[in-house]
Image 1 (cartoon, rainbow, N blue to C red):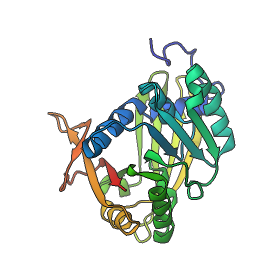
Image 2: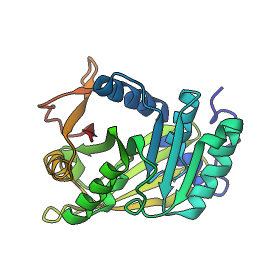
Image 3: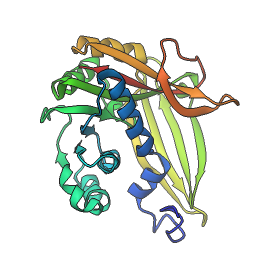
Image 4: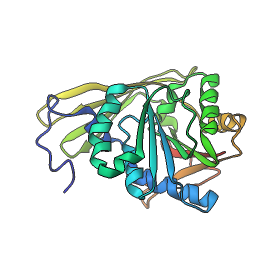
Length: 270
C-alpha cells in the first residue's frame, strides 16, 4: 500500500506541504539508479558518498542511503525549517542508518567539503542563480567539493513550451498538483513558476511554492562547466515511448529531440 493510500482525506487545512511536494514532484528512486549508472559508466565502480545541494527535506539523500549499506549523504540547504522537517520525517526513520546522513544549513556556495563522489543539484534549484558569474562561482565550488573521480549532476528542462505562460494540472492520489508558469522575460530569461495544490473538498493551497529563476540553456551551462574546470560534460536526454511520450529513460545524446518540452540531465566529471 502506498504512503498516500494510508493517509486520511486531504484538505488545504490538513495537508503537509513537504509531503505533497515529495509525492507530486520527486522520484528519488529513479534518480538514485541514474546516478549509479552514470557514475559507473565513467569510473567502473559504484559511488558511495553523495552531496545533495538545495536538498530541502533530503528525500534524495535518504533514498541514496537506503540504496546501499555503506552509502552516505550530505544535504545542504538554507532553509532551517525544511531541514528540520527532513530530519524528522526522512532521516530519523532510517534508524541506525541515520548516522550516515548529515544536514548542513548554509549557502551551497560556501560549503566545500568533505569531498564526495557525487554532487547532485536537482529540481532545477540551481536556476536561482541569475547571473553568469554567480552560476560559474557555484559550479567552481561544486568541482572543489568532488573527489578526483567525481561527478556533478544537474537537471534541466526546456523547449518552446517552457517559455509559454500556462497551467499544467496532474491528478495525484488524494490531491491535484498544479504547475503554473506565471512570468517569462524573453530578454533576461527571468522566470517565475508556482506550485499550487487542490483538494477534493474544493480547498486549495495557492502559491505553496514560488520559484524566481533564470531559464538556462544547455549550451550556456556546458560552457560554464568547462570554464569552471570540469574535464568532460555529457548530456543525458530523456527518451520517448511508442506514443511519443517521455519514458523516464535517459541516455547520452549529442543532438536531442527538438520537442516543445523536454527534460535532461547534465553530467560533468571533475
